[in-house]
Structure formats: C-alpha cells, structure tokens
Image (tube, rainbow, N blue to C red):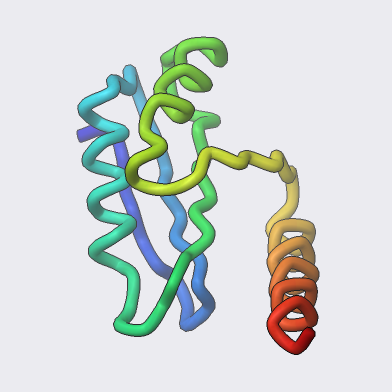
Length: 102
C-alpha cells in the first residue's frame, strides 16, 4: 500500500504519508487506519496527509479525499510547517472549549 499511517505522539494527530500512485481504495485504508489509531473517548483526531511523494495529480487527490466523507470531514487547511499545523490545532481546541463553556 502506498501509505504509511502513524500516530507519533500523545496529541490527537495522525500522519498519513502517501507514496507512488494513490487510489480510492488506498485512501479508504488510510481512513480505516486513522479510525484504528483513535483512542477510547476521542471524538476526533487531526490527520495530516503528506502527499509530496505521491504520483497522483492534485485534482485526483482532491477528488479522492472529498469522496470519503463517511470516515470524517474533508476540511483540509494546507500547512507547510509542522509548527503551523500544531498552532492551528491549538487554536481550534481553544475555540471548541470556549463554545462548550457557553
């Protein structure tokens, strides 16, 4: 399979690294592995998909990612640095916590 799905830390972040030609079936497996890496009590995890080494073109990748909504949202902000990604996650959590307190 041209994907490696890992959870490198205790944070609710999963990283999927794609290589070669990626198909809809491959991405279905990525989504299933993401669900397997969720811990009990977690409502969600953030998945970072690194497609820099994938041979599929950008338009095909977007179609594949958007088709799999039954396994989670397809909101895809794009970041180029891990620090930027973690910063976005922290902001999202703060906003969610504020909404829960209201």
